[in-house]
Image 1 (cartoon, rainbow, N blue to C red):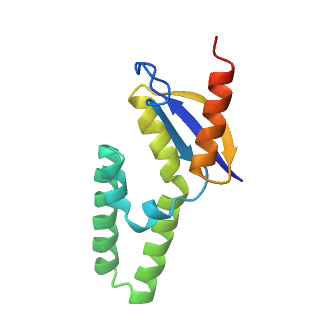
Image 2 (tube, rainbow, N blue to C red; image 1 turned 90 degrees about the vertical axis):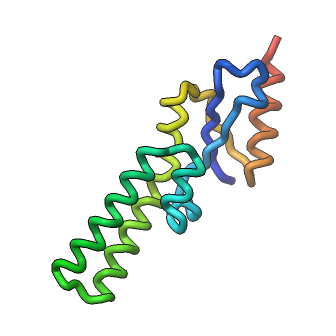
Length: 126
């Protein structure tokens, strides 16, 4: 079972159209495609920070003449850090855009989690 946090746009007229589910845990797409992933999720500041950090690592490892194995280790550590924190960045970006946390739901995949959330949400609606 995977855990998802559900964020809803309070301005949206329809709850099912304004809901975003964000998975807990490591995010492989963010670790592999750092800047592209942040741009896709409209995290503009995060994209700038990632570009600056990547450039800083490149300059620092060149300046200190770090061997290729050391460079790969630094890059792998950085990518792991991005992968572990990416979904938290996404939650923060949604909060800055006005989304509110509507709940936490579990499911074997995204579709099952969405189904569980909407079944619960509309079962309690008047």
